Image 1 (cartoon, rainbow, N blue to C red):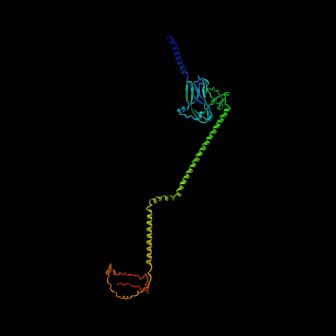
Image 2 (spheres, one colour; image 1 turned 120 degrees about the vertical axis):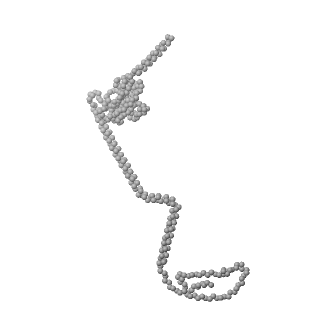
Length: 355
């Protein structure tokens, strides 16, 4: 029975140590992310600092800072632009005032930046969204970053920051004395900004002129189209006539030629009748020819020579008997118009008498 006591004490001590470790971890203050302060202007490399809250107990190498993942950006509805890939995040631990320095190698031309910062620590992970509004050079709200040597924590060679790129106040000088180099740098930045503004104005003027030229070209093309439409009906005024006649010729293919033939024949007959009527009128209007009257010669009848005609005995063998009526001859009188042709006096015409 007593042999079980050491095992029970060991188990009890193990539970006490585990609970004590848990209580100590919960009692440790949680690390947090504070506000961001900007120390650079527009068209300059970015220089900013993010305050670290309750970071006194952190040691070197326990903190990792960077942009959040693409899924975090999508869930937050933030676009991850290419400019964010140039940002460098460097933890600077200085006791009570620990910060995360945010820098970039290239000048920032955007008036604002929006990104998600991810902080990995032994107690967990912290993600926070930051929006930085960047003012133009010469603005009163821009405070240059003091020349303080940072204490790097888990820095990589690619994350080195060149302090000469940012405006620096000289610590040897008094608080009211401005470095001439900084003054020249500010003047050059202001001049660059003015040049940029003038370039933007020139671009806007060129864009406006291009728009005006495009509208003028469009108006010119519309006028050309209207002129072509106005000229087209004049040149094609005769063209619709065959198109309108063609269906009539196809539909009246069987009837129209006959009508034309009948009309032409009727007109020809009418003209012929008028011509004949005129000819008759002309003939009727002509005077009668003056033909001398010649007396008709008196023709005395000559007696016929009587011949003895012996009766012929009828032939009984004749199979075709003749009738008396068949022997008679029909004499026709031939009337001669005396005005058509004058009779020859030397040759009197014989007049047949009916016997």
